[in-house]
Image (cartoon, rainbow, N blue to C red):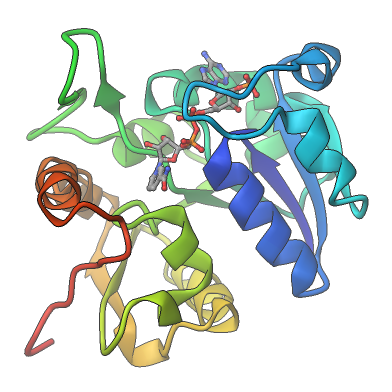
Amino acid sequence: MRYAVLGTGIVGRTIAAKLASLGHQVTIGTRDPKATLARTEPDGYGNQPFGEWLALHDQIRLEAIADAAAWGETVVNTTAGGGSLQALEAAGAANLADKVLIDIANPLDFSQGMPPSLNPVNTDSLGEQIQRAFPEARVVKTLNTMNCQIMVDPSRVAGEHTVFVSGDDTGAKQAVTDLLVSFGWPESSVLDLGDITTARGTEMLLPIWLRLWGSLGHADFNFHIAGA
Ligand code: NAP
């Protein structure tokens, strides 16, 4: 399968590397490939410059967002939540039409400092905004409620724990479930919450996720829905 992963941060890198390790073809999309490759400083989270990372993953390509999206059979959104709609506009509606669009982003708003708030929230979600903006894309919100290392290696957390999926398209959710199983998730851990409006619930887990992170002092934890 050809995957376009939009986003050059730690989530995009982690998902891209996992997909490539499973034998998929992967292209990462960025706004300006030359500028992204020219970065020599660690990013705001201390991750190594993207070019250094890419040099260690020579089976993964870097392209402009639209080129990556046009090439991909499945598109994964791992951009900053506040820029996701812009990123997907750059991808182009025609390049997203009829494709499964896996949305991992969270609409964190850092404009008022830390901890971030959510925008949109309560009566809307980023997942819904994306589905409304790109009605022909088959949007599935998933994996946004855990640290990215756990997304691709659920065994980092002992015992049973849960990954949610939200989306309007049953076939797309099954395809994403199959992908999650290939990442190491037991099918019984995948909890289908329903249509894309249920993304409100998973995005609104972020405030508690952030407090748990602060309280536990590490990110190797996840939610487990007992009795599911
Ligand atoms: P990030 O720093 O939140 O986002 C970096 C990416 O966003 C870059 O590729 C950047 O593009 C793109 N971007 C930012 N503004 C943009 C705009 N206006 N238009 C187009 N692209 C834009 O990266 P991250 O930490 O890897 O997180 C990615 C997403 O996953 C976020 O939404 C985050 O909330 C969510 N998430 C993160 C984790 C985690 O473990 N960190 C877990 C769950 C969910 P360029 O490449 O062009 O600079």
